[in-house]
Image 1 (tube, helix red, strand yellow):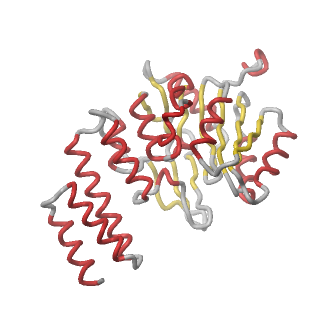
Image 2 (image 1 turned 90 degrees about the horizontal axis):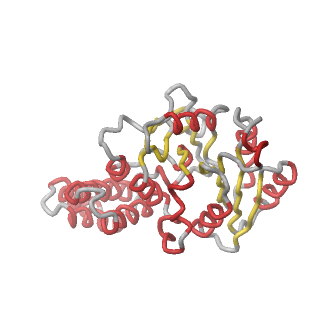
Length: 302
């Protein structure tokens, strides 16, 4: 008899906050039902979808008593995530996303990893594979993590999606507060906040990697290396997470970020925004030759 059957409270709460993803839900639902561990609940929040996402979720809930569906009137991830967290009952939390498909033993292996990990482990993360449109692996996350604190690794570059985590519920109760709106609404900030709050450990290497697929040509924001969301998160961490990331290291990471963003924007034909991004790199490393060369190159091409 599992714990759910014994006391009616699930071990893991799976949080799905989504909008306009009806066409992608079937694979996600099948993935959840294929899990070898059955002691879970799903809290699904639809954020003002204009397609039939809400109807699909409600149909799922009618067929599965472990699924609860809520509806938010705004397309705001922060509102949806806070609502989902407030309704969660499990000792552990994992995030769902239509981009992500888990192996059948994901929940079982993740739970085993966090419970067998070092004392104080607050979260475990799984190996993730980014797939192209044809389903071939084009990128594997994370690489070898070097620092004693994972905050630095996440600050330097995206290392894994939110959906590759299993987190102890008690470690993230603060996220339910209204003052955590920015963190809840920004995927990169949420990952950095989590890493700042709790100890992260890798999950078992034997489990099947998490698979990340693109939707309409886009990947999850939490692994986008040059998004505006990422720049906002990095600035937020620098200003609010005192001593979490050494200031000099943070400035160099921000300069590198804006250089990469400038390159991507200029290649995409947005030379004005690319030039602005290159100038922002110089704000963090004023004497950096690479940034000056980039400004010159963009100015000449523009």
